[in-house]
Amino acid sequence: MSKNGFYIDNFFIKNRIALAPMAGISDVPYRQVHLEHGVGYAVSEMVLANEQFLKQGHSLEHLNFQEYKESDFQKYLVPRSLQILGHSPDDMATLTKLIVKHNLADIIDINMGCPAKKVVKKAAGSALMADPKLVKDILQSVIKAAGSTPVTLKMRTGVDSEHRNALELALMAQDLGIKAITLHGRTRKDLFKGHAEYQTIKELKQELEIPVIANGDIDSVEKLLYVKDITNADAFMVGRASQGDPWLIAKLVAIDEGKKYYVPTKKEKFCITVQHLLNIQKSYQEIIGVKIARKHFIWYLEKIFPEVYYKKTYNNLEEQIENNFLIPTNLSHKKIIKELIIENTANEIFDKQEIETWKSTFIKLNSYREQEVFLLNCIEFLNKKNIP
Image (cartoon, rainbow, N blue to C red; front, side, top):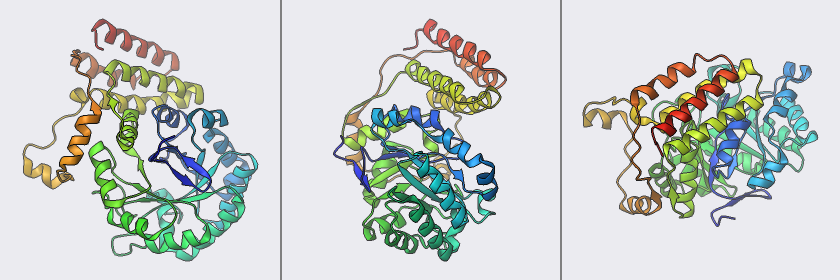
C-alpha cells in the first residue's frame, strides 16, 4: 500500500488520486478503466433520490447498475463509493436505506456540488448551499439512515462569489458526522467557467479534522503539484480531464508516489480504448451503448492523437495569457517531472488524413458489430503502419 494513502472512516484509500463522479460518464466501464490505471478512489455518477422514482423502482435499478462487484474491491483495493442527489431529507434517507439494505456501497457520497440547471431548479446539488437549514436536515437524515456506512459530502465554495459559505457548511457537516469532504474550487454560479480557486480548499484543510479532497481543473502533473503546494489537501480529484485519458490518472498516481511513469505508445493507448468500448457493450443495451461509445471514442482520439485533432486557438502570447490559467514556474516541479516522466522515444509515424476520418466514421455506426469491425480495422491500420 502507498505511504501516501489516507482513511475515510475505517476505509484505507490506497493513494491520493480520486476520480470524480460525473453524470452520464462515471459508469462502471468508465470507473473500471481508471481503476486499472491505479486510481485510489472512484465515485459513481449520481443516483437521484426522487419520490416517484423510488416508488417505481427506477432508483433501485440505477443503483444496481452503478454497482461494481465486491471482487473488484478485492482486486483493486478500493472501496465502492456511490453518490446520491436530492433535496428531500426523507427521500434521501429512503434511498440511503436501499443502498445499505442491498449492500451496494461501502461509502455514500452526498452531491451538493452539481451546478446543472435541471438539478439546481429542483433545489438539489449546489443549490442546497443557499439553505444551510435544509443541508443540516439532509445530512442528519442520510447519516442516520446509513448506520455504520460512512457518509461523505461533495460541494462547491458557495452559491456565488459574494456568498462563499463552504467553510461554514463543512464545519457543520463534520460536527454531524460526515467523514470526508470534496470541495470543487468554483461557486454554483461559475458552472465550469473560468478557473478553479484553491484558497477556500486550503482554508477547509486548515480548519477540518476530516479528510479534504481538492477538486477543480486538475488536468496535468504541473497542476497537481501546484494544487498540492497551495492546499495541502489529503487527496486530489480529477474530473473532466480524465475523459479519454486514463493515462493521466496513472501519471498523477506515479508522480504523487514519487515513482517513474513510462508513457504508453499510441497503439497501446488505442488498445485500451478498444477494451473500454467493449466493456460498454457488456454493460448497456445496444441502442444506448452505441451512443455512449461514440463520445468516449471521440475523447480518446483527441487525447491519443492531439496533433491531429487539436488546433491552435490563439495566435499570440497576450491572448494566451488572457484566456489561460498559467501556472507559475516552479523549478523543483520541473525537476520532478523530468526525472519521473519517461516519454516514449519511438518514432510514431502515421497518416493524419486517415486518422482524421475515424471520428466522422465512428459516429455514424449504429450497431455493436459495426463498431467492433471498425475498431479492429483501426488496429490493423496501426499495425501496418508500424506505429508502436
